[in-house]
Image 1 (tube, rainbow, N blue to C red):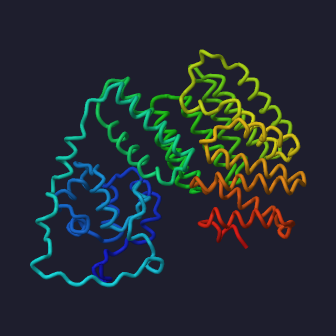
Image 2 (image 1 turned 135 degrees about the horizontal axis):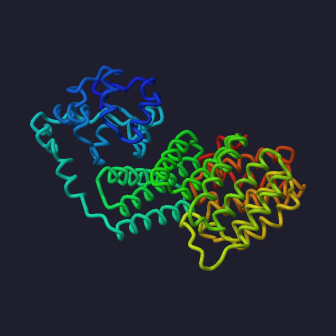
Length: 446
C-alpha cells in the first residue's frame, strides 16, 4: 500500500477519549461512527468506502436500526478507520506494527488493468445480515453447559500458557454472549447467559491484569461486576471484587485493595449458599491487603480466619466453579506469601516450599509465581545459593507461559540481587535468565 492510499488515521485525542474507548469495547458502532463523523470529519459516504460497507448500511447503524456483529465486518472497520485491534477485542492488526520495525518489502509490480479485481467481486452488502440468520439458535441448558465448559478450558490454558493468545477468543465470545442477552428468553436461560457473560468479562479482565495492562483489566472487571449485579449474583460480585483487590496490590494501592476485599466479603456474607471455601479465599485476599499495608495483627487475624473457614469445608459443599482452584496447597502457599509480604520470611519459606512440592505441575504460571516468592524469602534470610537456584526453577516455568506479571516479579528478584551480582550463583542465574526470557531481557538486564 502506497503512502497516498494509506487510510488517514483518526485523531489521537479521539482514540484516547473514554467515550470512544467504551464504545469500541462494547462494539457500539452507532456511537463510534457518530464520534468519527463529529471529531474526524469522516462522513457516512467516506465511512462506507473505508469500511467496505454501503452508505445505507452505515446510515442504519448510525440511526441505531442495525448492529454489526460479524468478525469480518468488525475487522474491516478496524482496518478502514485505523482503530487499534485491542480496542475492538481483536488481535493486533498487521498495520499496527510501526514501519520502522517492520520489514520493508519492495513495491509489488502494478497489475495489468484487466487483472484487477473490482468491487463487484466483494461480498454483497447484506452478507453479514444473511450470516446472522445462521447463528440464531435455540438456547437451552446444554448450550449454557457448553459455554461453561469453554470457560473452564480457557482458565486451564491460561494457567498453562498465559492469556495473551487466548484474549481475542475470550473477548469475541464475551461480545457474542452479550449480544444474545438482547433477545427475550426464559428467565433461567437469561440468568445463565448473564452468569456466562460475567465470567467471560472477569476472565478477559484477568488476562489484561496478568499482562499488567491495568486500565483495560479494570474496565472488564467493572463490566463483570455490572453483569453479576444485573442478576443479583452476589458470590460472583465478591469474586470480581477480590480480583480487583489483588490488582490494587500490584498497583501499590493497598487502601483500595482493602476496600475492594471488604466489599467482596460483604457481598459473600449476604449471598445465598456462600461456601466456606469462598470465605477462606476472601480472607486470604484480605490478608494480602493488610500485609501490603504493614498491618501485622490484622494480617495474622485474616490468615487465622482463612484457615478456620477452610477447616469448615465439607464433602457435600457445592462450590462455584471459579473457586475450586483454592485447594489446600493454594491455601498454604498464599499463607506463606502473606507472611512474605509482611516481611516474615522465616515463617513464609517452609509454607511456600511445602505447597510447591504438592502443586499441580501443569500450572506453569502458578509454579513460576510461587517459586519466585520462595526465592524472595530465601534471599531475605541471606540464603543466596538457595535463592538463586529457586529463582532459576521459576525461570524454567516462566519461560513456558506468557505472563508479564511473572516476569515482572523476576525483574524484582534480579534487582534484589544487586549487592551480589558478581557472585557465581548470581551470574549463573543471570545467564539462565538471558537464555530463557529473551523478549524481556532489555528491561531486566543491565
